[in-house]
Length: 408
Ligand code: SF4
Image 1 (cartoon, rainbow, N blue to C red):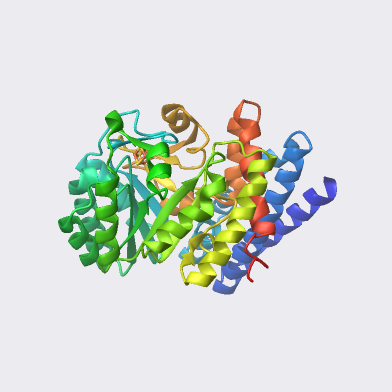
Image 2: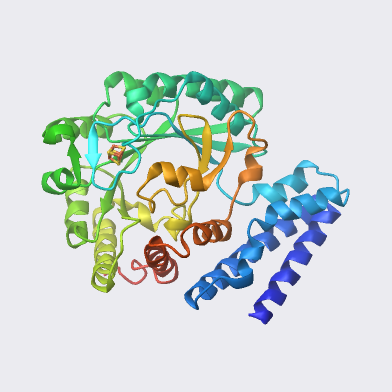
């Protein structure tokens, strides 16, 4: 491990040197250097973890923040280029507002709904102001729940405020909303069209699969309503994609679900393998077989299989969006899919509160940061096996995408 550590130290020293010079070209080089460092750290930590323990890799946790502190203490002027190089190259430009925990459904894999809460206008405003204070020229605001359409007043308010702040600061803000679709009205669609939203519509596919994984309160049959609303979205002039969750139990039907959704005329479909579930050898093998088959189907039918797009970052378990919950607590979404207990997860991954969370970009994290955080939280507990399993699946997608060579 000594050789790896020496290489990492050399990379970090180069990044510090570029940053200390502070010029625009120095910042660009530093960003490239920090990205290389992140990749090396992620690979090293993964190998160390498989060998039995993270050892000194944990010392590197959030080294970007340490770097920023050292630069400041050393009297380096924190101009925008410098800050962007340290913070802006890492993490996501997206903030998620979790506007309500309420939902009409009782999905098997839901973590949030059990803790009733609704976002106040004050918290929504504070979250939007925080995001729009970012150093980035383009940011994303995503509405999530629970079911965000049950708090459409908060969605509207936050959207209007974000637009007004963005135009005053020459920024571009992109809006996204993830919905189960049951409360999708013409009025809501009109609002989304007028404000340039992209939608993610959760639907696991056929009647049988949808109703077995995503039951409604009291076991009500809501499928006709879901189908009507999905069709309204298809006919509306709004970019969207359908997202279906695939579990180890349902994986054998993945290509049938994709074919079904494509047959309804949907042009962008994403299949999410369930996180927080253990994929044994047979289930994992089937997952890769099904994904290769789906890729062929997509190519034949001209439907976009979103999993193949570069924007979908694997390993998904290491993706981390900053999320503002109803009470103003900001947590890293990393771990939300692993932890059964949403309150416990929030306690572990709470990073700030709005208002008063400081610079949005300063909370950026890389895949290495997220893995280190997850290992710190679950490295010894029951979830260690699941974490390493889900991570292994993601790394396999990254290294050997099943759609490479699947055509024909
Ligand atoms: S639709 Fe979403 S919020 Fe509602 S129960 Fe299902 S997973 Fe939970």
